[in-house]
Length: 89
Image (cartoon, rainbow, N blue to C red; front, side, top):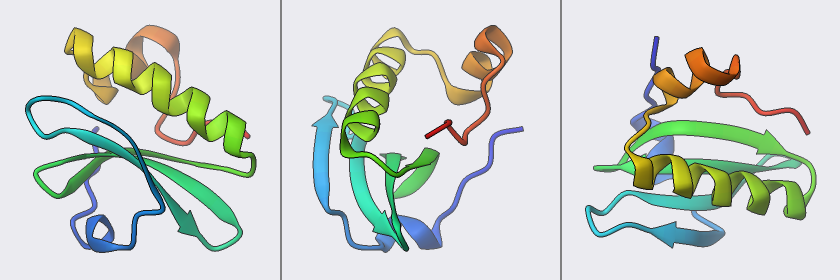
């Protein structure tokens, strides 16, 4: 089941990695000792992962951009690749 987090979407964004024409964007934010990669649509976080390394966070952001451009939502991707919303560091 897809979980959304309305209150977290307003937290400060560190870097905007990308934004699509429909307003969907991927941002990096500081979440405690981690970087959090977030995909945000209509100010609702629709996908997120915590990473300890900047390069890993940027790689996740790029993969999720492709997912969004293809129209694959997080719930469909979880079924396809067995992943959940928390990526491995």
